[in-house]
Image (cartoon, rainbow, N blue to C red; front, side):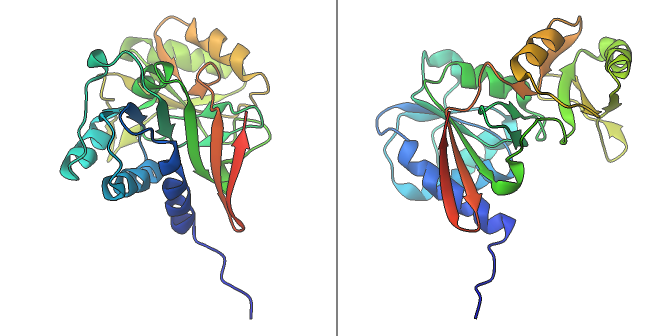
Length: 228
């Protein structure tokens, strides 16, 4: 009798548990945002690991950690973190990612930049050969949104302003998000550097400079560890 394949939710729990071994006792760690990270936060709260505190990438993650008794520290009080643990919407063979489905890409990049190691936790559906099937989030200053939309159209892509319940989504930073479809991002670092230079772009959701060093990938055969 064949076993039932694990659900996506079960895979998220598996990688969340696996990420605990990267938490360094007595040091700070960075914590990302999203449904997989929520599983990690739950596992961290139950782990009993004695770490200094967590630097959060979003108001949502801060609220979840504080509710579970995890000490949250502002990034301005921390010079470095041993590890940053976060999910991804897509990850390619070089550890470059698309992130921002949870609307926290700017803070995620800032926190990741101050960590010694980026550990990505994801289920196998996020592992891709080329980035771009998932709509690319781009955080923009509101007045620049129409021009940035036109720039993506010139590249053959379609940028749509993200809304929630019929209202324009406003990020934790007070900005707008464009979700861009129709891209194939073969050179992630070049693309990130290029779009970052467009006037009005706050952050593009390609993580090539702050790429993953390790990916804990949840598969039907268990957690696969990929090093970059």
